[in-house]
Structures are given as C-alpha cells and as structure tokens.
Length: 286
Ligand SMILES: [Zn+2]
Image (tube, rainbow, N blue to C red):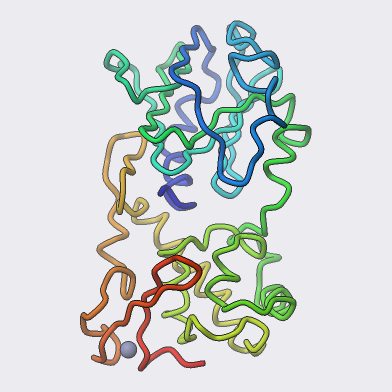
C-alpha cells in the first residue's frame, strides 16, 4: 500500500513539471473506490464524471502547485481542484508520452506538458473534485487527519498528551493516523525500534522522555524514506517509474527470525489489531 513517503515522492516527481500546464483532455476509466471508512453515498455528485463536475469543466484550466496532506494529493485548478488518493494499489505517473491506456488505468489528466495517469488495479484510489481543499467534500476527507510528521507542532509534548488519552498499544495508536499521519505499518514498526519502545506498551504508559524519542524517530524514519524514494513492498512505482529503496533499509519490518542489527538477538513477528508487527525484544522495552 502506498504510504506517506511514496505519496510525497510521487508529488515531488511531477509537481514542478505539471505546475502551470493547461488541461486539454480528461479520460475516465472504470469507477474508482473510496478510501476505507468513507460512505460513497455521501460523496455522490462530487465525483469527477458524475454530477458535481463534468470532465469537460476541467478543460482549459491551468494546474497550480500540487500539495500533500497525509496520503492525499491536492491538485489545484483555476476553478476548484482534484483531491487524489492512491488507495491500496494505485500509482500516479506523469509523462510526456503515455502508452495506450490499459485495463487498470482509470484516470488521465492530459495537459499541454504531459499526461498525469492514475493506474490502480484494485480501484481503492480516488479522484474527487472539490471547489477547494477547505470545502466539502475535500474538507471532510481531510478533517480527521493527525498532524503532519514534519509539522513543528508534532513534538514529544504533543505525542505524549495524545498517547495519554488512549488505552490501546502504542503501535496501534500510531497506526490510527489521528495523532500523526504517515506512521503506517512499516514506519510505525521502524520508529518504535529506533525509539527502543516495545510495540505492545500501552500508549498511556509512555513517559514524556520516551515520547520525545518516539516523535523524533517517526520524523527520522519518514524523512529517510522520502529521501530514499519510498518503499516498494507492493505495487509502488513513482511518477518516473523508478522503484524506491526504503525496503533495503528496514531494520525490523519483514525480518522475523533474523538477527537484530543492533543487539544480535532475534527479531520477532506478532499480530496486533490484525496487522503484523516486527520488533526486537532485546532492544525494545515496555
Ligand atoms: Zn535488538
């Protein structure tokens, strides 16, 4: 599943090239699904190609500066904009020449400089037109997101206060995304390893000094992933078609039974809330 670093890498890979380009055609494939947890009926009428905005209304508009919030990309146009999500298996590619569309290509935004194409085999991705990022339906989709990891307001104090209000494991509190966005399964495991915290620790038992360590670890792990081009554990390809390399850097994720890089102990795999957790019992303490 594309995580925040992959989405950010995708944004960086085409934002400068598409900014200022004029939309000359729009092609829609099969209907896309919505991100989990959204009731589609609440958004009917806002989908591109349905009532809210006909594809033709996008034509002749100039693309502005693409921004990211959580795993959403906001592509502003002169009138409104497009909120895009890659879902479980989506990828966005921007290229001057694109091949004829295949069965999994469900959205093409053709501009004077190239085509932005959403390829999404499982169709959990979304392209939603909204009058602005601050109004419905974009505002509703963005409302429940936690702080950005690189926001200066996301620090140990913020994390500590938020963890104290929850009684789930610290791993699950991070995964929820309501405290900070971006700590998906891989990155939550890696950040907890870096901070030396057992993922099973109850979130309201995390001390302030450990919250400081954990906040810094979340930022570091995500910054490193963006730098390395995002992970490629599933279908991710960035807009240049290049594979990322973060998976080579994972120190506990996917390494069950292998030697811990820090202490030489054995990395363990457990399941928390239906998701696999990898950690080192020697290095990570409750
Ligand atoms: Zn260890």
